[in-house]
Length: 324
Ligand code: VTB
Image 1 (tube, rainbow, N blue to C red):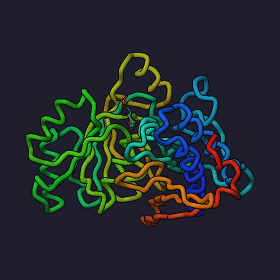
Image 2: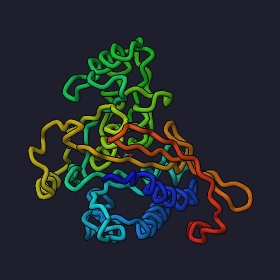
Image 3: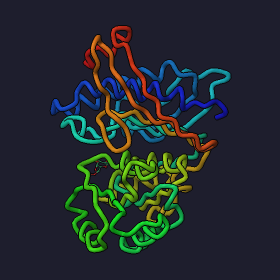
């Protein structure tokens, strides 16, 4: 992975974001997701890599495209072999309702470096570089908030915790409220929320709570690049899910996974905003068939974080004209 592939991958998340953003607010989650998947799959064809999807749209029998194990890219003699964790549209409901923080996202690592997380839940904790070293998934929320506040040199009342707004988090929310910390409740999209903890001016210090496990691995990739921290523990809904985790090669399925268990570097992370959120601006459509995208591109080898604002001439990219 000598090449800064991330700069090439950004074209892929841009394509997926442009396509799915056409469906913003139209109430059709499936169509928004399909548009992102189709555009991402198409865009991979022009990339000189020997890629294998290890976190994708699902297992082969349930996802026709970008399924786990699918080969992507133009393999060739000098094409690097990489594993890919992707989510063409993270936040389908957000996109369908025109809400906050839907993104298109790809993480890339050398072969065998991502945990092959099954499609189950994960209890997560994430923070940025300023608070790294202070969090522990096994500690109660109060202890984590206290430790983060101390590390950041903030009062607890100045710490903002992001949590998915779900009935399963009722107790967690009550515990966080008791500490006096601020809470940002989100309807969906905990990848962009986790990554936002690593971006100084995002206004978010800590992510707590249970979301999707595959997306936990993607979040860990971003925080590896940013120098933050991410820890997770799988939360199974059934014995079948536990069996699947073992089948996918996860050992000690009940233990707490540290960031380096979920993904170990060198790793790259790329995301493009679909709808605006604390991390990225969403796609905006401009006069004369133009559209603007906002992306973040980073890699762990150098720690460089780039934001890329692009203007696209949709008339010269026919596939992006209608999104259908
Ligand atoms: C969603 C979504 C997240 O996990 O919450 C999902 O918003 C799982 O939770 O971004 P529910 O089944 O309660 O919706 C994510 O997709 C990823 O972690």
